Image 1 (cartoon, rainbow, N blue to C red):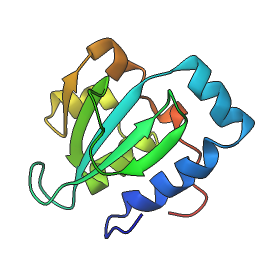
Image 2 (image 1 turned 45 degrees about the vertical axis):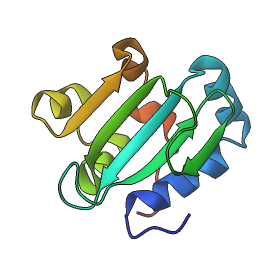
Image 3 (image 1 turned 60 degrees about the vertical axis):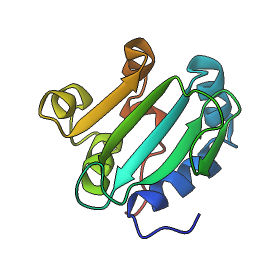
Image 4 (image 1 turned 180 degrees about the horizontal axis):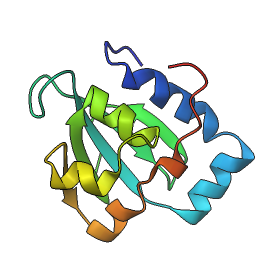
Length: 121
């Protein structure tokens, strides 16, 4: 996945993580599709789109073919903060650091627990 975003490294690790037993458990536990619109600096500008498909157990670049369960928009740094557990997703949403479209119940299952623990980011 060609990308200038720091988040791409984590998403690449996520791809490998989904092939492990822990990743397969996530598929069974969550079973939802998330589209991530990640912007280098400002939400809505020069966004790169990634899909974390926890139904199929895949991570890909580009918009989801169909309707994702939830779509998130955030900046590169805020996504990394949320995924690593440094920023609470609810607080990020309240502060406007993250935007959500789609099912709120699906969005609530999008927690730092679904991401592999970063080795070196």
